Length: 296
Image (cartoon, rainbow, N blue to C red; front, side, top):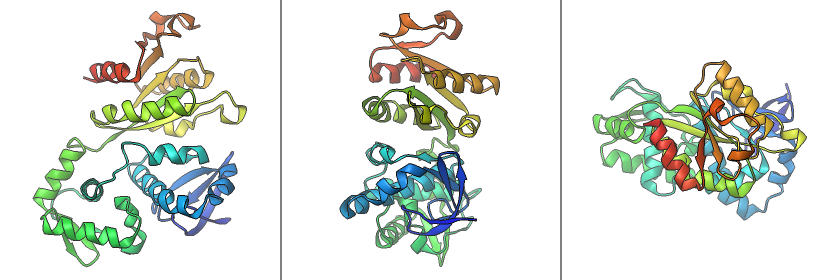
């Protein structure tokens, strides 16, 4: 099996080729899984200036770690990195980073007091989106002093207080995968990430935004990611064939689909409105409210 340097955690790991993507297996970004990086993005990411790498790559590693730990599949391209790093879902404060560690322990235990091994710590500071080990250790000490967790060597246990805090921050249940299919450029993607994804997360979903373009090499979504979803939101603004195909595939698997369309395109659909009954929206803020009402 071929091996390659992971740009995000600096490990050399086995890779497998999957179409236009390379799958990186078992690195610190996904110790028990893998993530997928578009092959032609490798050199452009590697060529980023050192200050940009310092500010960006550890965040992407943490994003991959959290997503794959929640059983989501991660497919990345070079132009995804900035939007991921700037997403409101990325923790910035020490408190929010600490909550990510509590949530990790919550996912990997059945109740308060059950030990979860994290070893070695030097390979795991992406659990808190931290840039280095020193910040992770500081967060662990802080959570211990606040009686959210107990550390015994490399084993960590949530206290009753920590368990309740983790349950509250994840809605009291494990987050369900949700794929959002859109057709559009960086501006639309950034707007949806900022305005819509946090609202969907409030209903117990872990949303992933998938962008379809008209470029031949980007014509397909990963059907495995679609199949793993518990909900699909398909925006048919622009009538991208890939959106219809992926949403139809989801319907065939019994996955619920919420259809949406911008009012500017509502009268242009080749599919009759009564057949899919899409939510018609004008702004991302309005759509967030309408989808919240639908999920309620």
